[in-house]
Length: 90
Image (cartoon, rainbow, N blue to C red; front, top):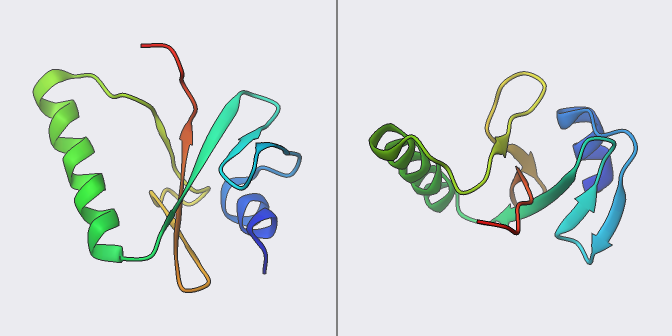
């Protein structure tokens, strides 16, 4: 299964266009950033950090897109994928 299959099946992004190598793509809604994670512990730390930051300041630097069944990431080959809205402006 390649990354496009995972994005379609897990996130519902059936039509996407790659913009900047394997990390940035656009869907019918907006630009997205794809992150690859090799270590689950590091990914979990990132998720917990984002949750704590949001609870303390009520702001996030970018929105994490959940899978269709509500998970914050999906398995991919020997690691994990997370998808975020791509926001360049502060």
